[in-house]
Length: 139
Image 1 (cartoon, rainbow, N blue to C red):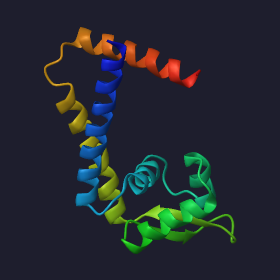
Image 2 (image 1 turned 30 degrees about the vertical axis):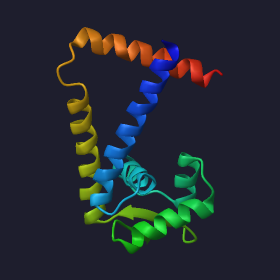
Image 3 (image 1 turned 90 degrees about the vertical axis):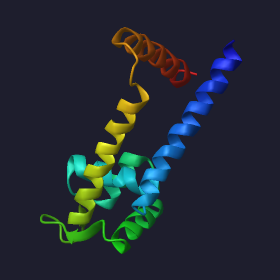
């Protein structure tokens, strides 16, 4: 039974990833770029080095992501108000709309995924997920 649950969990993860990527692709986004937009939408303008730290990626990696977002009109690089040497990555109007759409899509997908499941089963599922995550985090 354990391997069956594991296989079904992998299938669920793959289905969720495919659905998320399909929705993002419609806006010309990847998951990595969408994560940057979501973070900027939540926290406001950030320096690239802050973004690299938050996502635990290299400066080169975040530069590539930001370059792509600049080219497609989702963000701009603006002068930092307190540090002449630094720039801030800032959402454009298109970026704000995209960040809001991403968040709305996440809520919509979550609602669709858990539709018809009684609250007590949702709470039990959350407990199982917490245990699974703890098991993997402490491995």
